Image 1 (cartoon, rainbow, N blue to C red):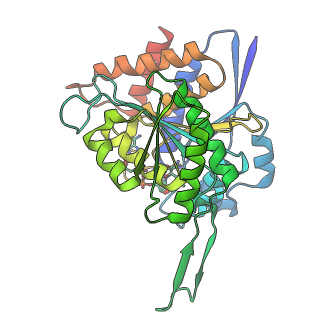
Image 2: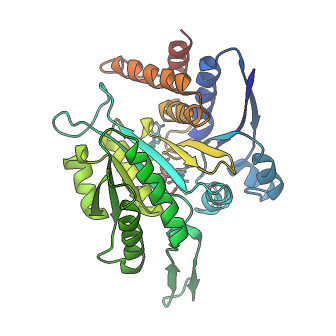
Image 3: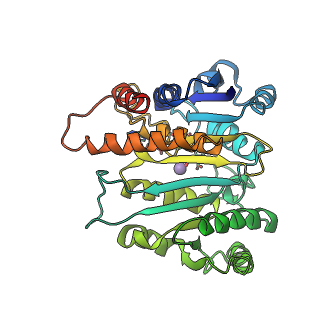
Length: 346
Ligand code: NAD
Ligand code: IPM
Ligand code: MN
């Protein structure tokens, strides 16, 4: 019999609420011969207030031993912005070399989109996860004075760009449409932009059956709204990928449906799965949070661990559940979790 050792980081705000539903559905979908062992890590705002810790090294070491990590969301208005985001979430992504941040966007039948017509949307964003402006390479001079100067340097290495670009080409090659779009801003960010474009063009020669395209990120936001069907796989840097995936979520049923995986493709470290959204302090505690994004992240987690059939069952359950949402009374976080758990086990 097989065992899944899962680390769970509920985090803050609605993170705790949606993770409970993710675990509910995970438990319901697993066949009896797969044993689930979970260990919950108490990290986030509460911990920081109590101890000043964000992610102690001993905890980081223990996290390494799991097959995967399920994270809700972190961040709280009572903690200075960036403390938990950098000290916990980004620390995990960097320490576990999650260089592929996988964010699929699919407009399911019955999902509500603000877009006109009935666009076909089925693309995946491969967002670089360990570099760019996220590395903390910057500083402030004369802080708080009228002469303050702040820098936030985007770090792009040939090694880091090539590995994520190669991963994106391989993913594009495995999909029916075999198309990869590089999104950057090489008309202004000329150094990083040219590094990305040169490596993209060089790796492209190894994938002659993949059609390639390039868009500046500002134009990409136009097409995500006006012509999302043109996208199959998108590869982009850490910050552009963050921004366009919130937009992608908004046009494919909303942020409550958007799932993600922080993948360490080499398998040296556990990959981490989480909804694209944050801790949503504006609705925390109200029962209004949609747990579907987390539940779909559980599907990505299962697929990553080789449980394809169970992943598919969760995705089918979500599609069926969405079909019943139009015109129906709004359900609570817990009710949606219950409904999906019932569907995957029945
Ligand atoms: P957010 O994603 O938390 O919220 C944006 C809007 O979307 C809010 O109106 C919120 O109510 C709504 N929303 C989000 N998830 C929803 C869900 N499941 N169901 C229904 N509505 C949902 O983004 P924000 O407000 O910019 O950030 C809040 C905090 O979360 C900040 O501290 C931020 O740093 C953090 N954050 C964390 C993560 C993460 O842990 N991965 C991601 C994004 C933001
Ligand atoms: C996300 C979030 C994070 C990011 C923040 C909270 C560090 O917005 O996962 O999309 O920018 O990557
Ligand atoms: Mn984001």
